[in-house]
Length: 175
View (cartoon, rainbow, N blue to C red):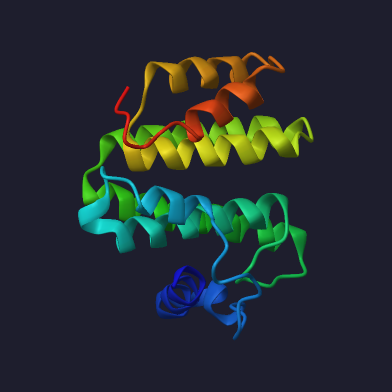
């Protein structure tokens, strides 16, 4: 559901990004993604589809910045950077409309930590940041997650393991 919904939303948004949406997104429709992980959480369950879509926008924005986007195809790296910023803004504005200040704060942390990890060319850390951030959005922040983010900010190699431990905690355990 995620990538077709993302493609439809970007086409409906219009502008340059709409002209660059692929007709068939190239990704496994059953793959576990951070947006799908967050959408399963009890914090967002009443608006799961909205959260999944806005997080897909932010994820696609980060992939335009740092990797291989799944829905938007663009050859010009400068345009990719600008469109990535636009998708960050689209996703965050949708989140702001939902009034979820905790998730806004979590995404601000996620985006800044992701930029730090990518600048250090640390893909495992970037993946752990996304997974732990999605868990925090779906299930709520924990002191352990805040401590793991502090490790990441400090450049501590233990951050990956700490973030993944937070991400893979028992969702039934509120901690």
